[in-house]
Length: 210
Image (cartoon, rainbow, N blue to C red; front, side, top):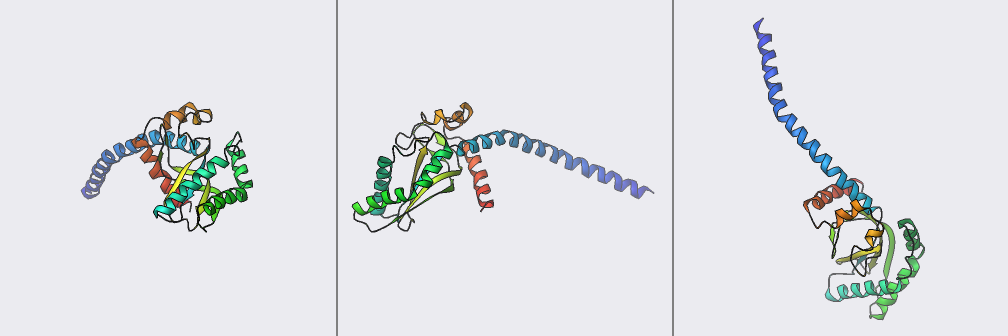
């Protein structure tokens, strides 16, 4: 009759040992999640309010990279009065309705510089890594974007923000008109480890959604 009692005591000891390890780990995970979750939620609120411009060069050659920047400048010069919507949705609609016009602008610039590439324009959602601008940091995440692919579109890319309009200034002043104080505090706090945490989370989420 002693054997079952011994087994019972052994199980109790094992359970207590596991509890000593599991409970602290569980508490740490719970605390970590409670800290990270609001940051992720704030980051995703930001990505839901921004329209980005994404330009991919034909290749990584110096000439193709220079052309990419010329197309960027030409686009910004000729669309300054185009994206006048007061909300993200309005500006997405403007972009979608003007895809042929944007393609025409890009192809005009490309031809003027002596290339026979053509540009393909799409308005869609894309994943972006963390991006540090002059005085703010945009967290990683899935953003609505105007994507311009020049030729093969296999070269390094360039991006900025069409709405709110910070492409020319790359400053946070325009952002403050559309983001909450909490969201502004996040992006103007400098690049901190929390952005890396958000980036890891958003990368995993993006891959799972593919």
